[in-house]
Length: 159
Image (tube, rainbow, N blue to C red; front, side, top):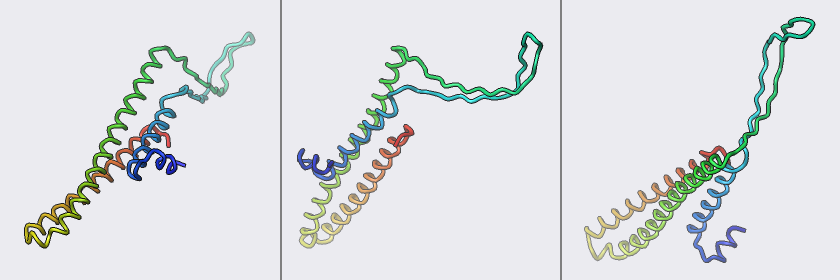
């Protein structure tokens, strides 16, 4: 379904994957920063209770389910945290898109240099292998951005 949407929006495969990251980022942010933070507390021990008939020591168990009441300030801070999460994720997606665009340019440049390599002699060969090195560095940079983005998506504890 996503591929069909990308084709309808005239996005390339690389751009579509970046758009997919944005959708995933928003989904994770919604799961992480909305809803109530409930907490279950289980306690146990021995306590002394005083009754009309006297004092007794006995074991006890306790189960609490806490639901916090949110004030406007809490909701604002939650929205701000969500906005910061999305902002950092958007910066990572931007860097990933820039690296992918740079890779496309470097690959085109390598094609041109490969055809002109024999005409330019030793300098042409050096330029060709320099661009191949830049391509390898850019690919490594793309992988690093993907890992950072995946790490950022999982930093919220949601998948």
